[in-house]
Image (tube, rainbow, N blue to C red; front, side, top):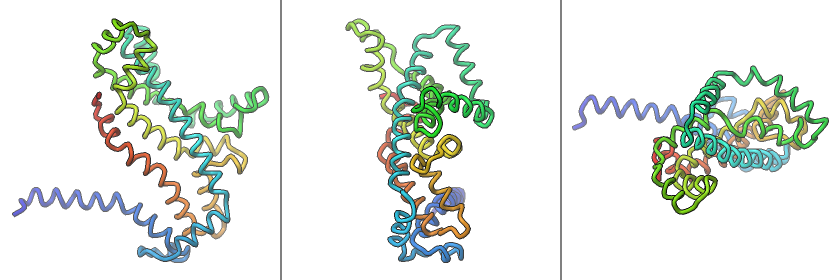
Amino acid sequence: MIKPKRFFTYLFLILAALISIFPFLWMITSSTNLSVDVTKGRMLPGSHLIDNVKNLFNSVDMWQALWNSAKISIVTTILSLLVASAAGYGFEIYRSRAKDIVFNILLASMMIPFAAIMVPLYQMFAKVSSVIPFLGIDTASAVILPTFTTAFLIFFFRQSSKMFPRDLLEAGRMDGLTEIGLFFKIYMPTMKSTYAAAAIITFLNSWNNYLWPLIVLQSPENMTVPLLISNLGSGYAPDYGMIMSAIVITTLPTALVFFIMQKHFVAGMTGSVK
């Protein structure tokens, strides 16, 4: 016999789960229906998934958009993990009053909205375009450079480093490792759960980034997936079945990354060190 308190707890959790997965179910079922069925609110699976996918790849260069998003996301993730982990490691392991002041300034920068620096950032890259074209407007570098690390990620690594066993560093120094060697050979392997969590967060943010790529990417061949989907929905008569199939395809890489690294993600978010 289920106790009333536990019954209502399970009921609440079931309702919360249904509400959470409803958008995904609606997205998947809509990708199998015609546009007219989507506008009518049809929730049953249809038989037009293949047609929607064919129309999508015939209408736009989806492969190029996927490649652009993958290239930017992977490079951003690698650079973010390297820079943010090195910064978090340095702030925590080599403590000093000056470093604490710099770290507090970094935390204060989290309160500045991106919209406040968007215009001067664009002007800066516009000026760079005339000097170094591959770092200027309408390049992948212009998307990566302002976003490849954040104050939050540095804070995340520093907090995780608080539980890093310092005895390992002392043992490494006794074995003759340099400070750089300690970081790459001891710190990074030990903090793999933290790296996994940070990689998922960074990859998802970069893959779904819309505003900054919208500003700096101007050529259709450089367009990322979020920009492509936005253009699909901006016509006079958008094909919602095709749009939903594009969203499903776009969701697959992020879902795959998350499920592969889910175990390490949970461990990293709880601050465990292995």
